[in-house]
Length: 126
Image (tube, rainbow, N blue to C red; front, side, top):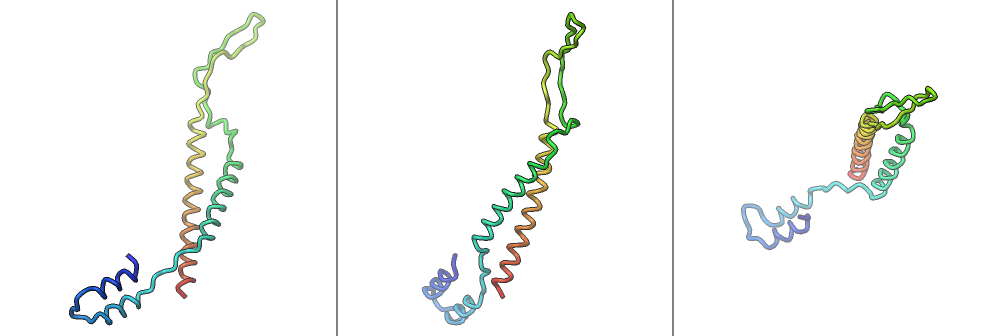
């Protein structure tokens, strides 16, 4: 409900202990915080995309400790060569590590956004 809707409802209501003028003056004295400008949200979106891209590029995708070879089958060939037959790769730990880092990044970005919004709202109220 907007401030003007409340004032219109007061105007349409019956008088009470307080005069309509007193109630309207009280409503008008309430300051509403200005919303953060849209450019701040666009800047945060740009910053988010940039940070996620940087994090993905810097992530250690070659971390051998995070990748497991599961159920490998080895064969010895006639020429005494060892051949790896069937195997599967489990990269669950690698994925979990990446998602953990991504979660930390989003927490940092959320905190930055909260701080920026607070600064913008404080500047708008001054």
